[in-house]
Amino acid sequence: MSKEDILNKLKKCVLNYDGEAAKEAAKETLEAGIDPIEAVQKGLYIGLKEVCDEYEKTTFLTDLILASDTFYDGANILRPSISPEKAQANKKGVAVIGVGEGDIHDLGKNLVKYLMEAEGFEMIDLGFDVKAERFVEEAEKANADLILLSLMLSSLFPQIGKLVNLAKEKGLKDKGVKIMAGGGPVTKKIAIQYGADGWALTAPEAVKKALELLNKS
Image (cartoon, rainbow, N blue to C red; front, side):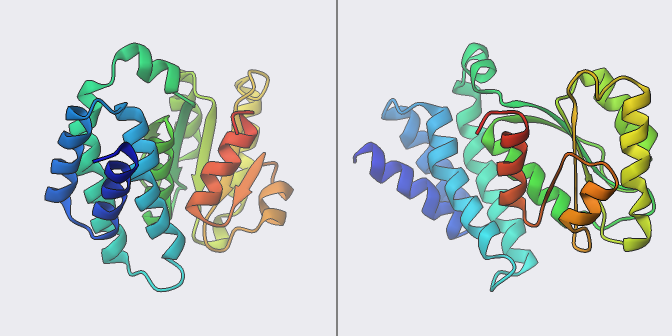
C-alpha cells in the first residue's frame, strides 16, 4: 500500500468515526516508515477538518465528538514515535484557550483546540467560566504566543476589552502575544472594537488566522 493510500485510509477512519480502524491504520503507518507527524497532519487532521467544515451544514454534535475521539485514537498511536526534536521543530506555538467568565458553552472552544493541536500548537485549555485574570496568568506562565477567548453570550463582549487591557498592563502585548476572540455572536467588528488582534467564524478559520497572526501560514 502506498503512502498516499495509507494517509487516505487514516482520513477515512476519522470520517467514518472508526477508532479501532484508526489505531490499526496508525500502526500500518509506522510499519511503512511514514513520518508520524505527516500521518497526523495529512491523514487524521484532514478527516477531522472535513467534519468540522461540515458541522454548520449537516453534521451533528455527536458526529463531531466521534470524529474527535477517532482522531485521538489514531494520534495516540503515532505520537510516541515522534522524537522530541521533531515535535519541537513542528511546534507552531503555545496558545491559551478558554470560555469567558459567566459562559459554559464550550463546543466551539473544543473544536478550535482539537484542530490547533493537530496543526502543531501546544494548547493550554482552561475550560469554561474563566476570568480574564486567569487567561493572563496562564499565558505568562506558559510564555504563550496566543490567547483565545470564546464567548457565546453577547452580554459578555466587554470581557474581550478587559482581557486586552490586562494583557497590556502585564506587558504581554509588548512581548507580541496575540489575542483572538470568537463564538457565535462575536463578529469581526466586535472583536476589533474591543481590541482583539484576530477573529474567526469557524474552527478551521481560527487555525488559519492563528497561523497568520504568528506569521506561520
